[in-house]
Each structure stands twice: as structure tokens, then as C-alpha cells.
Length: 171
Image 1: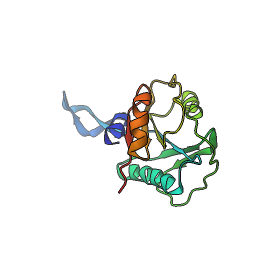
Image 2 (image 1 turned 90 degrees about the vertical axis):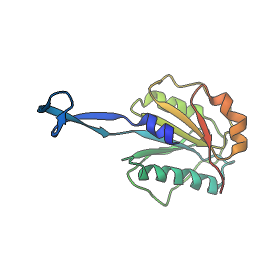
Image 3 (image 1 turned 120 degrees about the vertical axis):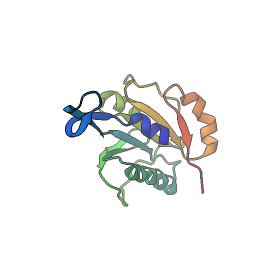
């Protein structure tokens, strides 16, 4: 997750007189780089995901705020996208979850194709679904996060063409 977070951090350059130019000193403006990342987290709310699994996915989203993320968009999905995208600027403790059907990754991949403003997509799932078509939007990095190691071992090679995968280690 740390490598994924570092790879999606975009850098915005801003000129400032408070820092000297590396080449010309204080004669010219220096630059300051601010980070502004747009991350979408898609959480699987199918019937095979327990409430504890969904809570574990949301706690991972909350940890991103500790590492400098300004806002995160959260999307719930099963066979389709459930509800609207939730824009989080800080951690929340109560969520309304609907759906609880089967699992299909295609609606999330099609959503990423239409919304090109995201730097990264993190899909938290149990992995019990067919492999989707990769999105046409190549600028958005995709990472798969599985709820356990068993489904990671089954699915990570199949999904490696879309993006890297990891699993949540149970404590």
C-alpha cells in the first residue's frame, strides 16, 4: 500500500520567493511542490463480504488520512455501483451500506473510464468475481486489495494485467 500511495501522489509546482532557485539563487523565484492526489476507493459490499470485512476496508481508507491525503472518494459496489460517490475529507464512523448481491468489477472499471480525474483506484474485495476488462483510462493506477491471503493467492495473477495486488493480514 505504501508503494501504491507514493506512486499516485501527484505534484503541483508553485513558484515562491521564500525558497531560492536552485540554479540562480535569490535572483529568481524558487519552486515549492504541493501534493494533491485524487484517490477513489471501491469497496465490495456483496453478500460474501461480512460487516467486519467492510469495516476493515473502511479503516484502511481512514489510515490514508494519516499519511497526508486531503480527500478520498469512496464507492460501494456489488453487481452495480450502489449509491453516489462519497467524498471524505476526514474519517467517518457511520456508513449506510446497501446492495449485498453478487460481485462484478466491470461497473467500477467503466466508472473509471468516464471519470478521468482520479490518480488511483483501490479496489477492496473478497475477489469472488470474474476478471474484468482493463479500463481504457491508463492514467489511473489500479490496485487490488483482498480481504484474506487465500483469495489473494487465487486471484492476484489473473488481475495482475490491471494492477498490483495485496491482501489484508488478519490480526
